[in-house]
Length: 414
Image (cartoon, rainbow, N blue to C red; front, side):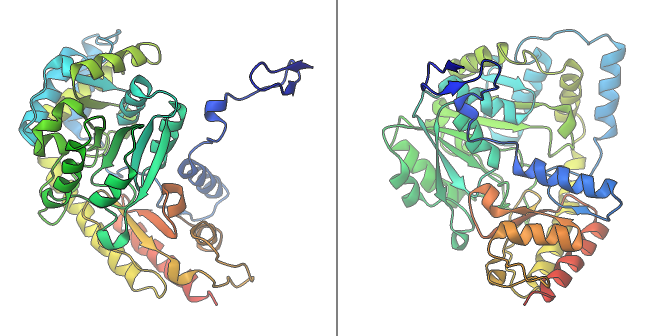
């Protein structure tokens, strides 16, 4: 036996001991649900998985062709640490075209997905005890990434009657001298909520009054906004915040390139340089072939964006209508992304046919998977209960069948 120098606890010399920074963190609940559903499929059960945040469309052919050309040209070596000049130039052009933002190449970073870009930002800026404000419901990885960086995630609920959006007065109350970042995701995973200019400006005004607080704007669902709502982002609306804003985006959602793993960000060069230090000691450069494909995605024909956005809008309307027809479920119509975030509060306290109590959103989601082979994610995973998230990045036929099964499962609750 030996004593740990950190806490005096006795440990066997061969005993595995987790680092404290990940002591309270486990693999994503979303991934766990997906793994359980996949196992049941292998067992022959007709599981419909509506948990993954992944478009069911294929990567556009012109993007795939660009990757093949890159391989043929021998673009298979290390690239510059945080993105090739060609990709950074394409990103700079995209920011100007779509957002009216002007970034030099040394104000742009490229990572292995938007997730790595956010992780790099927190690792580069957070000291132990620094706080990051998250608007709940939030993507579950946000809080864990803050924790790994030894920061403190501060969840501020976005009320359903405010469209799950963060209220300026609530933001003001949450800011302390230790607050380092506000992280905003619009449109949102998991709620699909998006901010209009009128709804975002009050939050930016709060940030203007607190110059020690930086803004991390996760815009990964930028091209999935419906009903003619213009997309807006913080640095675009409030130039005074540009020098303390990191605008994060990527090709995963809009161009159906989740597996290619390319995300990017634009921000002050000092921040970008600090993030490069983190990336240099973790992954180094993103995949060279994926970078070449991303150049084509950002600079090639963009008509695929509108076509797929319309397909997602039709699916959104289908799911919202069908869920709201189920007694005990209430679902607001989201403005963007490809998720619904429905309340199951009206079902709490009921019992399954075998007598099991539905006492939480997690229990409801377990019941759907066990009883009717539909995999969805409880809202508690995202910091707000009792809700459940459906990803409608699935075929209309699958969505209709899933909604039929959910309705049937709810009808037999007593």
